[in-house]
Image (cartoon, rainbow, N blue to C red; front, side):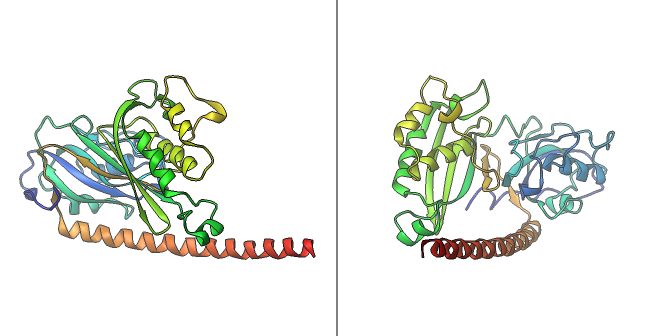
Length: 316
């Protein structure tokens, strides 16, 4: 059983309006948002959650696109634009009747609360997180499969990829893999699991520097594809600054998911109805994405055939 499998259900009596400090597990499809953190002129996950709380009458609307925040409001992480989550954790002083189901009543289908826990009044969703886990779903056919290697330039050698990832495991100063100027020393645990044409790259730490996960994936991918060698990883971990063509840019944000956030002593109770409705909502979004991928894949194959035929004609 996971921590989400047990715990006491939050009370739902609207007659009691004494606030309780409550942490919510929230899943979202980040592709249509400019990140989690509220921004005055962009649609963000955090801004949408605050708008839902205003619609519920939990806080004042504020002026324009901004809203006030309830007492104690904080989130586990500020995911970047395009990054999704299954266990983002948002906590604040909540009326007892505000359950995940109730919160979802004012949220779009791309953002779903599915579990909650009543916590200590001093709880802080950012500072009290002991461990954060991200998963990056990298499209990377296995280079050992000759057919895959011919079909996809994204093919990687799993052993090379994992060797690169192992070099990045443990405590290092990752100043060459983030734009942050402070807090760059992190102790990471990493692993990569193959599922068909996808390498699921899991990286966990107590906290992360800006875009660190995506740059780690990009660095390991370059080694796995044979673009660079393991010496490049050692160079990135050295005290010398690495920039320009020798530097590493972040991998795309869309395959990245904030997978888990652990809080010692906090047990989240799953709202079964909210979780099931969230599953259905994300199943629909997954179906739509697969349909779009099938269409673009068909266009790709048609163009590949056209290019191949044109190349053959030139050599005749």
